[in-house]
Length: 295
Figure 1 (cartoon, rainbow, N blue to C red):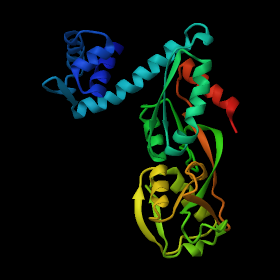
Figure 2: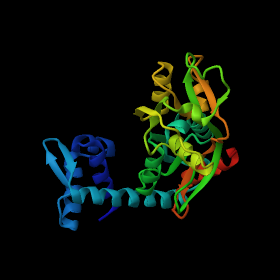
Figure 3: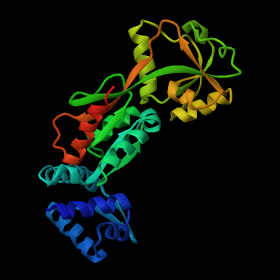
């Protein structure tokens, strides 16, 4: 087994095609097929189910894919760590981010970093906050950005920005002319919720628990998967919802931010990374950069 064989498996799995995988790796399709065949012989099992020009991972293939991701990542980190002049760093940094930092923090942060490190590119995957932790744990990303109120065991965090969760209401709503309301005023309201893995929703739940407050009985009109979806629904007067204040501020006059009396919904948007993981110098350069930008 060697890195080239693992890279071949990873390329086929990610593209779903021997042809596209060969193009990505700059090699012939027969050459790529031979690498997959050698790997399957070494492991004594089928890793891919061939379907015409396409391919799907078998159960053994999915398990091997996770090993390939970790091994390639660690190998790239070693190559990068012992490479030449740090000012000439090259490589790809994979960042998984929850929706709020992905929309309001990452664009400027990545732009500034890549202007100073022209040989490094950054790929961003958007997921909910719970998926951020899982993606990092599976080593499908190098770094994470999340607004979760707590970080997983074995991970370090750097606070990149302060954020506040507010109640977004339509400008036509009866709360719109109030700076704040009591929690009891939400009784029987249509509350547009986020999915359980949302850092925004977890911040609300955590803060309510810490304050010994419970949401009164209300109508959960719908559950949506992104900040922008919640704000859009609020703007159409379909209900009220908890979102980042950044989202309200960027949505014009159709949506208004209202606070809840006695409830602190401030949080950190943080860079998250595995504490003991071997990292390439290009990834470490981003962590060092984040430290200098830390709030």
